[in-house]
Length: 134
Ligand SMILES: CC(C)(COP(=O)(O)OP(=O)(O)OC[C@H]1O[C@@H](n2cnc3c(N)ncnc32)[C@H](O)[C@@H]1OP(=O)(O)O)[C@@H](O)C(=O)NCCC(=O)NCCS
Image (tube, rainbow, N blue to C red; front, side, top):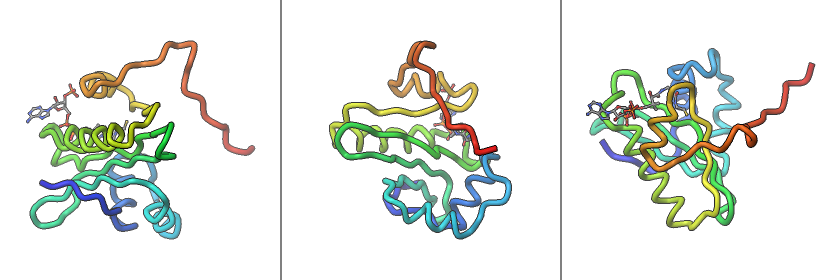
């Protein structure tokens, strides 16, 4: 397994979102726009170049880093793939000397991220999301 710094294809990203259960029917045009946006990608591939997992860093290269889209294919889980992806992301955040590196764990994933050095903010500083229109 190796971790590449090139984006996944639009189809690969769509497939990973479906695997995670985050988007049922991804729009191909939006997927293409997303992979070509200004993200730093971390893509784990096996020796046959088949994608096994992804992670993504969105950053201003100075103050903020936001880690999103950490997804590993089900058949490759519990083997340390996400840990390797996260270690590569964290190393890049440290290399960039970012002031604030953030993520939003899925339910039950806090211990996984705590093991990688993340801590939870107090309940007085919750994550907030903009409601959809209507
Ligand atoms: C969350 C997710 C990315 C983890 O991927 P993963 O590759 O299984 O993660 P790892 O293998 O690095 O670590 C997972 C667990 O397996 C354990 N593990 C790692 N290697 C192992 C091995 N060889 N044998 C047994 N267990 C192992 C790790 O210690 C870790 O335990 P913990 O969760 O108690 O901390 C994956 O479950 C996933 O894609 N979920 C759906 C999408 C999602 O929710 N993403 C998170 C968004 S915040």
